[in-house]
Length: 310
Image (cartoon, rainbow, N blue to C red):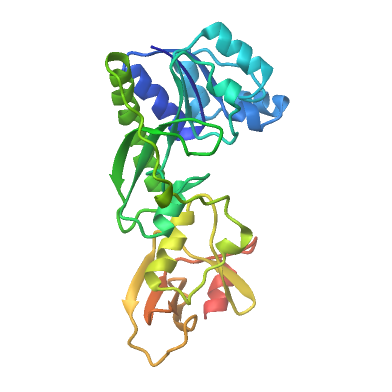
């Protein structure tokens, strides 16, 4: 089958690899960098600091589509010329118009990094960890004019480990997308797949993160606060106030402990260490969250943290 792929980052490279493994003919690729960046900035980035996806595309000598938007006249003309069977999308910030969705012979398919209908929206990796899910995955679904609401063609599930951050979960899901898209393309080439409508009763949508959400709330349980910190990495730095400064926890150095102190108020700092740059805070479930190797929010260095925690 002839495929045009649109996307960004690890999802894009894994979709390309999966389609190649399935024996598809990738007739065109459009990177999201070409859409989100001004033309000259994109050119300079490709020359002086090329992304992994740019190098990946060039290494396989794939044709790069030049267009300012997936909904642009230029892109439509390219699709009409390339005449693909499928447009495949993974990690994309635009809502597609119906005229674009209907262009390929078979379908326009999105690879959403979540188990739809839950966690529609821009960052399901983050939301799955933040909401204490035990599993996540990737959903291949038909695109429509709304975000992440089209009928489902296939899903692949991955396990969320207790120490996973958004970074590890993204790696797991994009790897699953590589395997999943290979299986899907082989099936689409040989048999009929019946799309399954999403159950709107179980649907949830989460928009982009707001500034307020990066501030930690210790009235929640220690497990919830720990998950919050891990979920936001590597996209955002969570922080909390201490005296006249703000501290950033290390998402890989969190420990939940029993409260053996006489403290009872959530948010109370029970222990601190300048040597380990650690802060232990009482959470809303009467458990402690110990955070080692905290950093200072702002431009000052470790020296100021040691002074503050002494």
